[in-house]
Amino acid sequence: MNNIIKQIGEFISENNNFLITSHFSPDGDNLGSCIAFHLMLKSLGKSSMIVNEDKLVSRFEFLLEDKATAFKQFSEMNVDKKYDNVIIVDTANIDRIGKVAELFSKDVTIVNVDHHFTNTNFGSINFVDGNVASASQLVLQIFKSNDLPISKEVSDAILAGVLSDTGGLKFRNTDIEVISNVKDLMGYGSDMADITNRIFSSMSYSEIMKVNKVTSEIKLYKEEKIAIAYNDQQNNPLEENEPVLMVLNSIAEADVFLFVRRVDTHKLKISLRSDSDFNVSDFAGQWGGGGHKSAAGMRYSGTFEEFEKDVLEKLKIEITRG
Image (cartoon, rainbow, N blue to C red; front, side, top):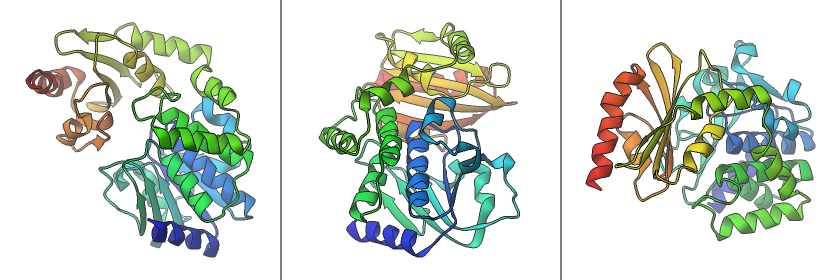
């Protein structure tokens, strides 16, 4: 691991003009890691661009003052411009970045920084540790080990990522290392209370109404302890998934939670969470998905009704069998 971290430090030192990216449908860990890299590189006088297939989530905009020039959706990019130096964070396999891969040059060098056990080691340099709660913690480790500058702004971005993937230090993945990292970040000047409030208690009225529409129709299967929410993204375009997942996770009668989104005709994206010993990553893997034991994602080709008959029924059976 130390040798890999050193290689990443050399990659940063020897190059310029970086593309930073992560999985589509960005979340806090995704964005915090990307923004931290961008801000650190900027402080070194190096150029970088964050590109995602989806737009920047508004409640994380406070982390990026130069968001108009630093963060672009793929649809805004000139595909003729190619990047040789790419940093990919919080992404288990290359397919999860979507069309952004079209911006890579033929001679691209990819630094892959991730915390998913299912990571396919797709990078030229792979720093993967499935034992940490967030990719942002690995970013912190890279910066500290290579004596890279950590300003308050960089620290804020990393802390936002850590807090997001631990549910504000409430999820089961909150361990001693998480607490130690949070302490370090507060030492760089980050205000944990302020960042927690910004990312967990700040949402526009219109977004709240959209979330309420989804959560008001949650289905609960008490016998199997499953809660499922469904949203048609084309008719009710949510900016992100986390607010719905937080509501699902708060349902006392459920241990396994699913948020299903229709993103196109007969195309579904599913986020799975587990608050029990049931491994949602293994389950999602049956459909080409994956992630962590307690948090995973997958895609499904078909209608929601077909999903219920196919995936949901199988999930019920597997949970019942224990």
